[in-house]
Image 1 (tube, rainbow, N blue to C red):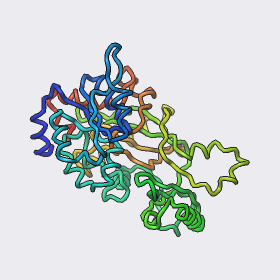
Image 2 (cartoon, rainbow, N blue to C red):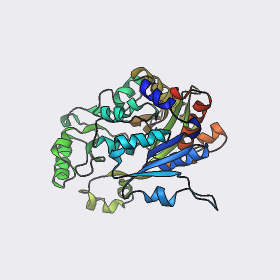
Image 3 (cartoon, one colour):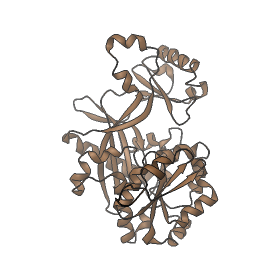
Image 4 (tube, one colour):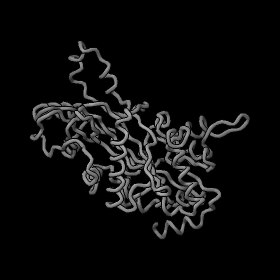
Length: 377
């Protein structure tokens, strides 16, 4: 553990540890999990986005209800690194749980170096791995997947190389934290679709130049939501889910006779929610093998490696034999609370355990064993 983080943690009242996250993405899962494990919680909200946490899910009595103990409203999420806010969190004995919204909103204003330095609060997990989700970072998720020997879609360096169905992942021109995806199967289709999206204001030439072009894997998608426990020294599968995305879901439901009318409608993959899905039991060992290799690769690349939740987002492609193709990696808590409604956590713990509660359990295990330094950075 960094000496400065260790010094701040030493000043904490360990009977009052508080799990804290950005009020978006998975904050309710963290708050509910903290409560289930006997810890306090705090949700950091932004102006205009506080009602979910400060009103509708706030804890109340007679009858007992809600899960959010307290909220801290900021003008903007990026104000989280302000000195006064950091001091407030330290005074509240906060252990911070990073979610995707934390990365997205802060990275709009700060570099990852600035985020890592500016977060003076102890963080659950390896803060130095968060940047690996970004495809333009050195030692990113592709490097980790290659080191782990995990199959991922072939990448095309230039549009001229496209010789099969491919997906182009470029930043959206108007919504910076989303991407404008489109499909093409040859250089001509790439050029035509890109020109149409630029004209529509969804892409910029600079964004297109920085886009990732990769083979489109055909098959059902499944997010393998893992948890690596330094305290137990074990990998576990918390659950599995798949995404519901606009406007992809709508396009899938269009009758074939109407498809021609929508040929110029660009595909969007904006998150709308998640639904639970399960694996055939014969695929579980392959899933665990991938997860173990990824944990080992992350530990070698950036010690201490993965701490807590991570996800390998995969497509199951036809064989024989069927196998996983990993098209994305999440190196923090997943966005789906539905993982608890698949059976995998109950097979391990005898009951359904959400990822938020599993994090809280790990904090309690570490606190009671005087091993917090092994799970915080």
